[in-house]
Structures are given as structure tokens and as C-alpha cells.
Amino acid sequence: MEGWDGLREADTSTLPVDQKAHDLDTNFVRCFSTEAGQEVLAYLKAVTIDQAAWYPGEDPSHGFAREGQNSIVREIIKRIERGRNA
Image (tube, rainbow, N blue to C red; front, side, top):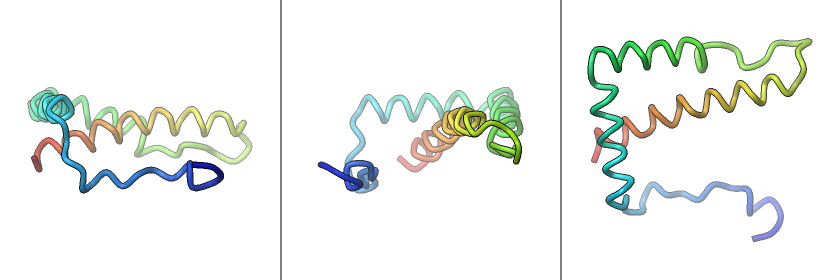
């Protein structure tokens, strides 16, 4: 694909999850379902997605780096949700 269409994420919600991805999702559920895992996830959320990614006056690259951190926590949350719904 060329142009802006190549940048859009494919809708994978209707695609079957392969076994490797399913197993990984299940491992995320196991890991973060424990009391310790829930504490770690709460901490990760508090220091990433619950905080502003950028403040006026800061270099814009700081916001890009912070969004990278946020995306890791969002990936963890997404895999937990997917693993629970499988």
C-alpha cells in the first residue's frame, strides 16, 4: 500500500489468534492475576499512562518517548484482556 492507507492498522479483531499468541496472552493473565502482578501493573500504569506524556515547554521528543513507554503498558493490558476473553 502507498500513501496514508499504508499507515492504518489492520483490523485484527475478527482474525483467529494463533496458538503462540494465545499462549502468550494466557501467560500475561497468569502473571498479572497474582497479587504481586496486580501491584506491578498498578505501578506501571501510575508511572506511565496515568501521567501526562508531555508538558508545554518540553522538547516534543519527550512526548514521543513517553508514548513509547505508555504503549508497552497498553500492550500488557490488551494481552491480559484478550487472554481473559479467549
